Length: 381
Image (cartoon, rainbow, N blue to C red; front, side, top):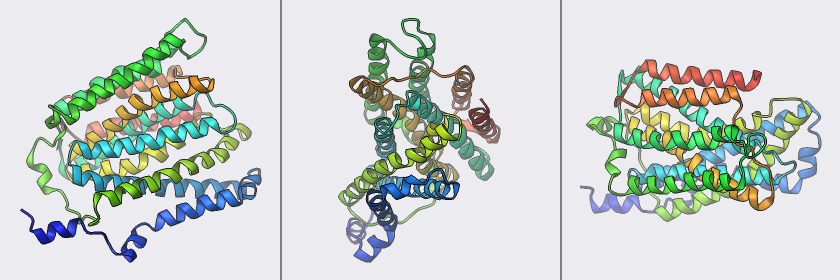
């Protein structure tokens, strides 16, 4: 049991110099926001010049990614105080909140992109369940041979993700009441209410009577690396969490402007916008998930990755359906045939991977190769 002195140290506020050093990227983010606000015409007026376009895109991408990592860092600090499964729940909800607000901001900016929500949702599923799960299983297996997780928790995630993904991304292609990959008003109500309702029920079992389903089932977690916490109280991390979230949403909207230019003027695939947005919002938590797998805590990786996919579908779909209906915007959710095949494939492989309670290197290789196929098909069609 920790001593009173150590407990007091854990909740003491760091000195100003330490705070400035740790939050230096927040200063960079705020400076970038101020620069865009004051010199907007200069920043975005020369996009037809590659020597101006590339640095602007690279700089905004770097700043948004660094800011999102700051969000994850403070969400993880809160998660250490809350424990599982509340910890990963804070993390996934923070990232999903950024995603929802960013998509809304981009949809309200410039020309309406009816497929943006679909492309972002699909990209999140493929990047997380293909690339990030694959990398985590590969690196974890190379280091520990086999990794264990709680089978009941993984099954609970997949049992909700699979039907929600089918209703949100496949059903619109099969309905006959409207033209194209869209839904009628009644179908929108059904597709919007179902993810929200199931996600609420899932949260009740995750934080209530079945919390044990989402905890590491063995003593392997005792071998994990230990890290010294920041020593700051929870309120400090909550305030900085929102301090990072607000500017990152603004910068994502600005980042969409050169991306739109590349898509519309240079003829790049339209899915690039959704893929880039998905990378921005998933990479920071992906780092945490890979780190957990390397430390032999695969259950934390499962909670982060599958929880993020579930939160993305369970929250983004109903919110965006409501927003698009209120604003009179078109919303295309149905996938193209090749993307539908990839979605069914990654969900099926995930069901097999998380059906035994143990994972090994072959499963990681399969997930990662499906992710590579997704990238190739996204570019070549």
